[in-house]
Image (cartoon, rainbow, N blue to C red; front, side):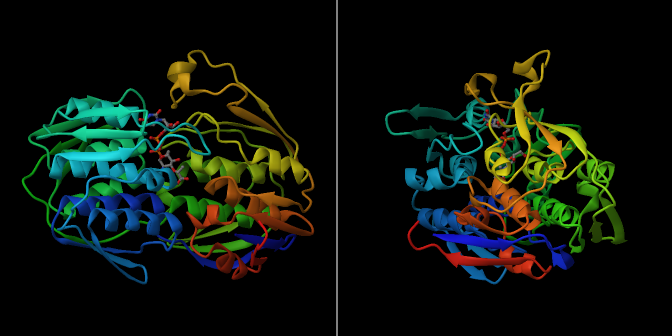
Length: 445
Ligand code: EPZ
């Protein structure tokens, strides 16, 4: 077990490069199952989830070669179509092999990926849509596996009941080799989905977005290999922007993508943060004179992403006034609040009145757990002091690092493997900006 030891209170200044997007790399790896040719993928972040998924693919029979930030995958000898339970439990995204295995091999057995730190996260929307394409899928609660079979998947029109980022990707990964045309309605608009689409088109797939929230896939006989470079990670850029603002610093971000961060820049500047366009892919983030309390409501793209709300919360603890965060995508994504309050933040929970919660919230309303809340009220500014903290999930982990960088004194943050899931060498990159942070082995934990 390892922990971070952080001495806060120092403004972060300097330059940082944004890594490739975790939530694109994982799906393009899965896309390698759709062809016998080699896929060469560049700008892959060295993070735990990447290596976990590569292990899953190797378990199925893929050949993987890692060379720095380039991964070569060839899946021409797939000899297994079952993902072991313990693997699925550690990596939800492994359930995404369902579509490609079904459409290429006619069968797949995957663990129910539901249940993680930010909610029950079922895949009912994925399963229901694949059934409409001709798959028979049974869930056996006694062993926790989905057993899927499909002699041949056929195109159809699927209307998702609510937004689903990876559900949309599952159907794209199945539709590209299905017989006929698949039309997805109420499909996800996250830009990471478009990066997967671009890679699949390079592999010979026929995919288009003819209208908002609509994706049309014309099934083809075969897909071929390609070489593809992954887009930068939006969540990383947001994290470094907030790190600059909260520490009173000035950070130059390379591989920046302002056009994909409009919803973030809107609230960041409203709150007093400064965004300077230095070049097409270089953005400077600075603290303004004063941080102003600014409310956010999380939404699927093009709204303020749910992945950004935890880092945003810690920024708002330093803002002047009362601000709220209303989380509408996941049903329990405030695990960091208790720990921020332990550091001196003043955050309370509440449930906004919404006219039709079953429609309004992106999660399944019946999945709500008693005692969880959908919004927090942050009163600032409050002085944050050091503490012994523990990471519960990836984005909450980044939030605790940001809080410790702001707090006076020495903080320790345990279970840093959570942040290693999504941020490559985060402590080295923060040190490069002047942060006093070190990774220490935690023997007894
Ligand atoms: C993806 O999760 C991302 N993960 C998440 O990032 C991101 O927060 C989320 O999309 C929203 O953009 C990956 O891409 C690997 P959803 P996903 O399907 O696809 C419920 C991170 O930190 N739902 O859009 O699981 C679901 O429980 C991660 O990188 C169902 O009920 O999100 C959630 O409450 C965290 N049934 C909501 O809908 C379903 O079949 C949105 O889920 C599917 C989803």
